[in-house]
Length: 448
Ligand code: ASP
Ligand code: MG
Image 1 (cartoon, rainbow, N blue to C red):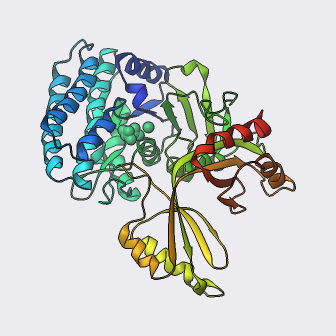
Image 2: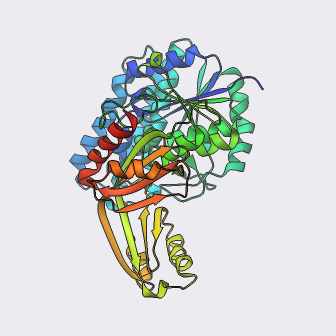
Image 3: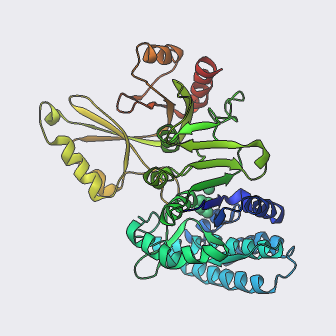
């Protein structure tokens, strides 16, 4: 098959008329780009989440609705022929207003998904029209007709076979004659109800769609020129990484480098699709290529930081020399659909951190019912205000590696350490107030 590129643009990339025009230029520059996945305009999803959580005061709701209208009007007003798009966006804004009112009485995850999906539904109307006005044969496509998921609202699971089947039937033929503009983040369940893949889910959407249409490349355009050795706002000497392996990049995404949604690389790896990450603001700066095979595999590749961690520690003398204890713990966690991130065990205790990617946001909590069931097995302690530091690299089991890392950290209190399960990462929890210092010290000693 000939080259078929999928390009995804994040919220800041489609924040206003100029930003959207830059996206269009990037698409126009690559004749292989047939499919474009867009986020909502910057800030829009946050406002919609606020409404979905239930805003009681009608004046306050009106204020948020006005902000939403303003963001979109600022772009629409610069179009040469805004009539049709304006109508479409107004219809969506009307449905936002009535859903927001409903949410003020009673919010639900289903209603939240219905509401927050509106950001992407609006941005894609505008982007498609803007591109048509630049002479591109752009058509908007409602991805809910293809991106089938289960009904786990707020964090729906894609149904891969169904997505593939639907994409082949409708999306692929459309891409033959047109540049197709569609939504990230959203999908629909079997009943046709709108679902979302969790905050930041547009990257994941783009990868799922790229897999379904058997794309040969996936570009993720955002507001940073690729992946850096760490967040340059924390360590100013952080350097760009031109090329990185799937394994290293997956560890980075998992462990909080905010550049990619953690699930993004799963479909790309499955289908062997190289992924490019770059800045739509400065495309000339290049970016990072993520692929299966890379030329360099340094011992120290990057540092990631993820805050808002919740650590749960279970202690029980019953665990001593017993079997099946952890199985029981995980049975409870599975029952409440609680995803675990890190885990360390001793003879009589187990500590784990909770994962959180739900659309509603906030620090992960151990649900009360789950806690009660766990308390039947062990004493349960829950701690917040912790950050996870992940060091990503290669051949971490090598002699001297751990010494080099831990001697750098002599002055810090490490709360939990995970080392050895993966050859590509070493991670630990630290108290939130010192987390940035930990990153700075490690970066200075191991990377600069
Ligand atoms: N608009 C959604 C969000 O802000 C999805 C995304 O941008 O990836 O989370
Ligand atoms: Mg994003």
